[in-house]
Image 1: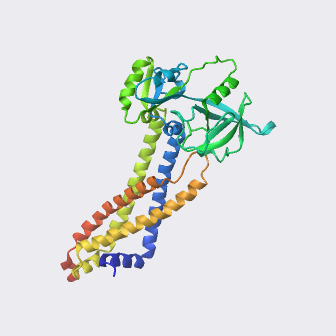
Image 2: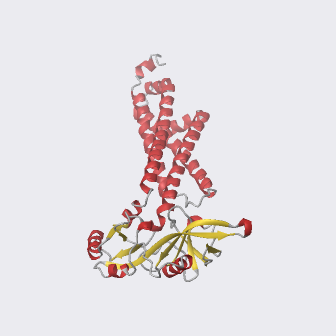
Image 3: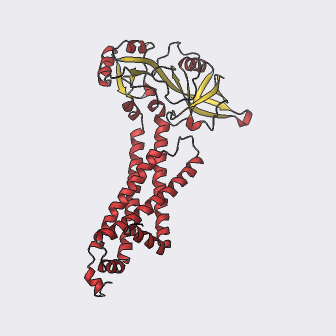
Length: 377
């Protein structure tokens, strides 16, 4: 047999189907908006930072004049060898990136697209962590967010060099600076660079040195050792390097403010509706109190109704989010992240239940004697 508060909650929902359906619809739209903003925020930041965030690296070494900007950093060729000699370093390898142009079509239908090319040493520090292939000469990976535009098995042609590379796989969360990103072997990157800029000196600087530490080694200790051994450099942990990418903090803060405001609205709307319900049902609650129903029993029924509304609304919102992101274009790796969904739904549910405490307080203020004497209005 169901508990009395469960029976009371379900009877109330069945009696007022339209009212609860409207409330569920309103909460569904708000939760969908919140989930979409969270997913979009993560996707946008990932498209800017993914190539750094998803690489097998503990520390990144920059030139001290770069202001921690990968594009502005220039280190002498061979810097990775000096870093590799430092105690606590398991692997050190060059990591380079640059903007290039690829072409598609012919004649008047020719299109030119600015992309980011990344060069790394497979198997060493700086290599992407989630790939389904290892690129060799004449080959490249593409970030998964743009794999529908540049599918595996197709070829991309770089302009004006005419270098043609075959896409042999994808790399998850590997976009950089919100542009289509192609990740290739370091030597292949150098060949592309030389073909694109034939007048450039043969030993161009590398952007940064990626460092993987020995297990159990303190990052701060190695960072200090690197900066002492290589004057004119600054070393950052991977998380600090990601945060230092221009625009990331501003984008994250903007989305945080919008998401926080939307979350507050969801909680307030849910709680406000149930406060109104409590006021409208005051005579019924008074009658129940008069015949012996306790405050906790009525309160649990109210909290159960709030939970039911939020859970059903969240399930519908998640389904809508899945459909929306499936058709989402723009090259952003926007996907339904279960962790984000659970976090958002849990936050909304907790906020809604806290808002329900206001309704319980109103129930507790009802005088059963007034209901018994017919004075409840």
